[in-house]
Length: 315
Image (cartoon, rainbow, N blue to C red; front, side, top):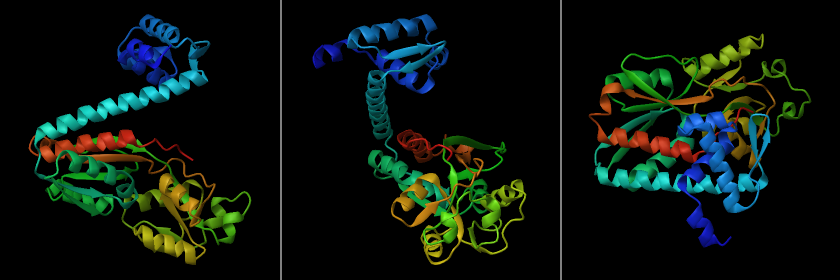
């Protein structure tokens, strides 16, 4: 089959089905996600295999597995669908004519990962919209959201709960890991355990922050009293330099930890953090999306930027 013949035969429905199969594995889940009957899904799979003339799936009981050709087609399908979603987003955003402002509060472990892409999307679609970003921790930023000084708050969540007159949306999940400097002798200790590190210096979140309470709880879950030898800092630059100069320990989002480990700045330790602080959410006052068009557009930018991120597994 030529490329032209392939393009003429493959439909958007085919692309959505093969992409959904890669993610969901079960026909029942694909059927529910796409609102299409299971027999119709099976028929579409057979049709796609007829078009490409190679097997795309193998079956084991009620679960489907993509063949190498199926995985490659699913990758291309995702790219095409993502590009179409981006095009629809850009056109809608440009047509909105937004030129107002949005004030954002974010925790430091999230701002560098998510905000650059979201802000770039906003400015590309609405160049006259202005953005103000403040960093802090949830406990100090949330009153500013309630009082109207902030339009949006983005934070890592521990023990999530409903909040009166506040809307919230989950953006993505990413593991938080324990790191240390490469010169710390404990970085090379076999079978490192929590008890080995509790008496060492720790670079910790601020004392009254959600992250600090979560960290204290993590030590308690491991049967330990939280460290007493601590340095409270939310500055990434400072924290990395402390880890370089001292045999100290700290925590980083997995994506940042991988980046700095690749540069030789830190070592990621095999300490189980049990998924704490992994969920990233945004919060806004429920009545504000109808009143602030820039906020509404930026929420869409956040969703688009999140779609562009790879989901980072718990490690």
